[in-house]
Image (cartoon, rainbow, N blue to C red; front, top):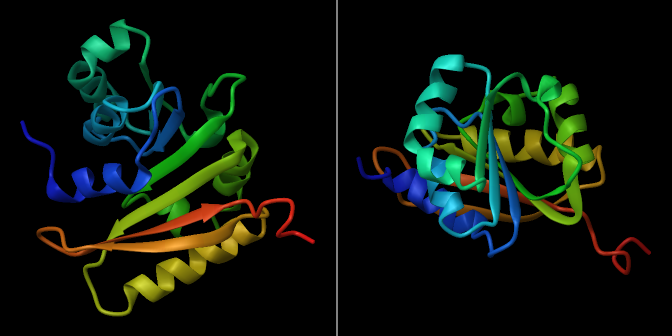
Length: 176
């Protein structure tokens, strides 16, 4: 089964480098996990649904067996993410990172993100005006944790256009 255009696009936005650790929040069937694992050193996928995590484990069986991918069924704030920070945290169409009131989720993201890491919150743009609302919400939630919008990426993907908010911690020189 081929990856969708939107998830292929999102993997290109994240663009993990060899050796990087990536966390996908809301990994679903594990398609984006698989795309990220092609480049990254290690990928952890978390999803609330045991059914989705089982599917993600099947899809990524070889990478799981090789120790490059780990998936688990848990809410992010309850997940065992291990002691090592992540170079990238990514989600696609996951409310836990794009809706107001998700303070607990963002606290976990901030805690597990490496000092020079990045957060990529990607989503389908299904209705006019939604992009600006999501960007503003993500900027507010990340900004409260010292993350700043580094870029807003846009992709002409089917069946809807996609967008992704990329956040990073400002470099020490930028913080004054």
